[in-house]
Length: 312
Length: 318
Image (cartoon, rainbow over all chains, first blue to last red; front, top):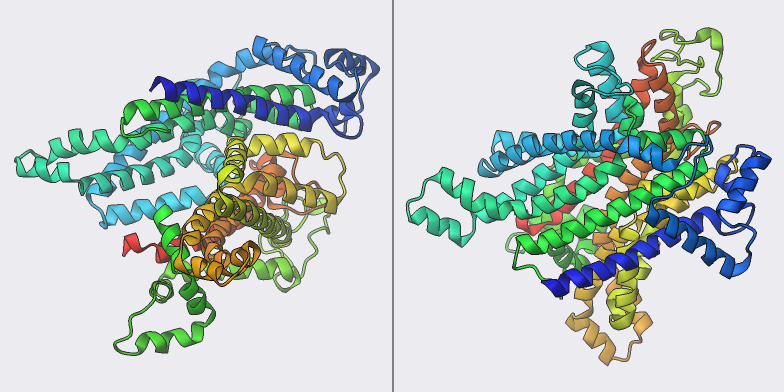
């Protein structure tokens, strides 16, 4: 077990260096003026140019210069110092204000996923090939096939503007009610996958020998499904949800942008719109780290939950 | 998944015969006493599957729209007059006009081209990369496999949308063709990993088959074995994965254009129109709903098509 965790940690460190190097190289290396590349199509003032040159040590040249700057950026990232956005605010401060909102939204989405996805998945598996099963399969295919940029604005229009059941946008201090509709939109994607995963997993386990044994012992069906099958079937679902939590943190760009929720995704959305290069790089770097960490936790969790799984 | 790949890989020779010789399949299947191949079974299933025909019809329709948009609307999508802002349906504009006074329906029809171009070419490039990488990793094994598999792991670990944002921010030109190419390349560069894994696993199975050993005994070199004997086996599962990927590439293009870093203004794209329609949804919702429905149906069509073909080839569901 310890060996596996150590191995996985080592892999994670490699992946961390790999991805941050790629993000950094793509952003700054190569031909042309790196500062202009960072600022996109906007003109750069002399003050900004001087600031960026000093911040990223752009006066050092060559491969050594590149790695010097990379190590510098990495150090800043690890210390939590992400520099300033083009508007002059500390990116760390922006993120600190945005995280709680994003986490709240992600948790609502996750609750929706678990509440509806897992329950419906278990029911669909028990009544396999029934009406409920077919209906949910078609429904999940629809949800999986419809991109968020369609789902989010349409939900906002129909449930927020046309029939005002939910508030159409969230303000600076979003209430739970304002986050509910975006949470449902955000959770619907993982809901569909969780439902399918639960259904497959429960179906497979229902055919297992231990279920037959339990049944022949005379156990009640509710106990067989509720205790024996569920415990074994939820392993892949739990790990999927773990990966999904990482995805939700970064996948909220569209949803937060559309519903005007001041979270991390919204700031990234705004950074792209206003051509704010440092803000985009800063947020993307942090999100990549979050994503990698979520994957690591899930992999370890997988091995803990299911002793049959060993990566050797 | 892996079971499907294995079976599809080993049965592929017959699969290709069955599919390419479609007209001949029914009477072959109808002959008494003759056992049908997996592909024959799959084709019989597909023929009776309404989802398959529906999605195929949608795909053909969208392809026709992309190739000959003039057949579907007589109006020019770039003919925008502000005095018609949010005007109702008239003169062939069956869904009325948007905020800029452009024909909403015509824009949606002309938007198919960019989406399909991005989807098709990204899938094509993805397919080539996946075939080469998967073939090398699966066929040679050893350190080649180890290195390539780690590369796949790393690329798979990069979130697609975030990486695409970083990459596309570097493209500062606004030339239509250049942006289109950039979006295609970025999506292909980030999206080839799943297909590569599928190819690798089918190559791994095909490599151990007797006919490969036979070919080797007859003196065939690595290149010939890979090209003539293993590639055909890896192709069918890869095409299924790529069909689904094509749908998600179209969605990704629209998402990037929606964010304002994919395709840009002179190009007509559903993502751009959805974003524009979203801003003015309180005044008029049709400019938002029409491109949304076009995009959703197109993406769904490709995903359902891939899903239907995969289900037909999956013996577990039989």
